[in-house]
Amino acid sequence: MKIKIRKIKKDDIDAICSLKEKLQDYHRKLDKYYQKGSKIRQKFKNYLKREWRKRNFKVFVAEIEGKIIGYIIGKIVKGKSLTSLSKFGVISDIFVEESFRDQKLGEKLVQKLISWFKTRKISHLELSVHTKNELGINFWKKLGFKEFIKRFRLKL
Image (cartoon, rainbow, N blue to C red):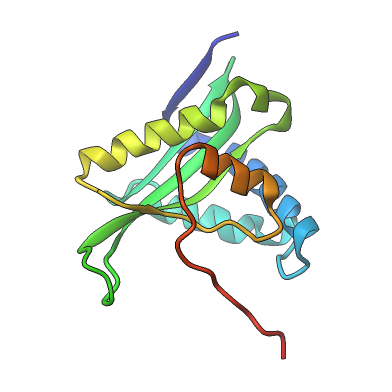
């Protein structure tokens, strides 16, 4: 079975939304702060439909025999006023079906997105990982990402 990494097509949006539901439910298991995947599906679908063709937004999918088994989303944003960067890249989502995770698909998706960022002259990437998401933390560290900021919250 050959796995293909490619840019999103409009017809892929529903499949990506199904994977997003799984990702969201995984995060909800870590922290009830997150809504159930089914509750965010339509909002996420509208977001993808609005953004997927924009110049500073990119989605790649991993596909096997016509079935989407993973995706990654990246975007270019303006630099923050406190930094020296005029723009930087953000990886907002990545998900690979659990049964395909031993094939380095996550790494391939990240490499594809990094290549796109490089063509856009991006020199820095950022992403967020929940503190309890050890799987995600280990994945990003393995790829060379370093922790540089901590966010805090207080429930009132």
